[in-house]
Length: 309
Image 1 (cartoon, rainbow, N blue to C red):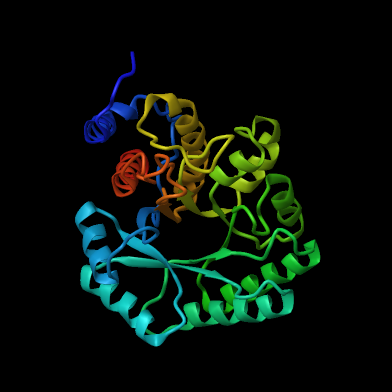
Image 2: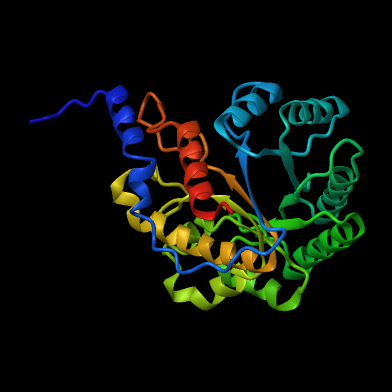
């Protein structure tokens, strides 16, 4: 017999299954090293899919218990001031996203460097980091390597960490490609969004454990989204059918947390479950299957409970 499910009740039920109940589904944490002075967990909110103003985003993020926001570095002074005014008003940190503005390499490299210089050299507020959607998957290894060299130069001159995200369509789109840069670029630092690699390699990367271990040693920042072999985002990590995926991702993040605690470094994490169409939707209506903001807050709570000093 066909069973009709009330969507509102479904969303309420899945939300109720989250929180503390899911903590038992996470992998057991091996004894973490005592946190050296300097360690701090900073969890940031994404503006991806948020419909309101920067002020509204920061207000909601602060009320939800976030420590900051991550947004794209904007080109206009007006948009920059809107961000800085909002984070200062609500006492939040900020991390910026950056990329090149052209598919042609030389133009891409030029605009990429200009964006990095503007974001790191602004006079309003020092960002925690700049996270790069670096290069293209079809650029040559030499070309993408030049972009890494640009970030190394700007990071050293500004004192601000600059990271390259493990993201589809970018230079770090696959584990084995990233490994080549790890082996040749000693200053390379990564933003780990390993959900993309699960999708690209159609696996939880058990056959590339050595490469993943090398990558984890270079991680400066994490994008905390749960992926799976057939996609970069599960529909709702609170649902029990995704327990294995959740455990796999937390096991990777645990290793980063151990290193950060042992070194006394700041650990920055962005909760980055996205809106439709990253969020699976119902056919015809395109209604999201779950609440994006609620999932991200749920992830924030898990991260703070697990890694907070």
